[in-house]
Length: 101
Image 1 (tube, helix red, strand yellow):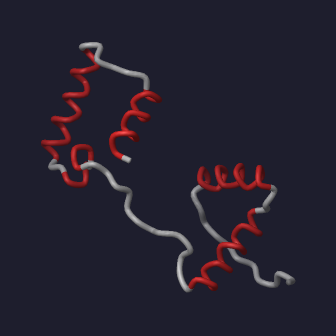
Image 2 (image 1 turned 120 degrees about the vertical axis):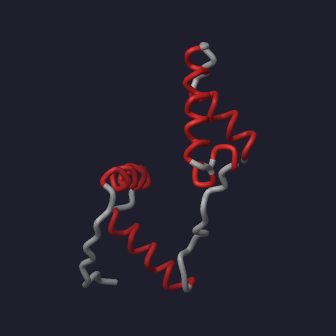
């Protein structure tokens, strides 16, 4: 099928760059990926994947905290750093995902 319409988009440059890297590895041009996405919308009658808010534990969800609670969390973090209570970020994220997945 011949493509006859031009679509101009404004997107976050970092998101675009990241998507291009993935698509390059898959051997799929950006225009083809967008065409696939639009076809899926037409076929399914909506966005072809769940659009939901991430599940964030209340203990770290700043949307649910007051300004004072956020400041208290930050102060606690600074105090931990001063006491040397730190850990590798990769290990911390792995632990977090196991606990909150």
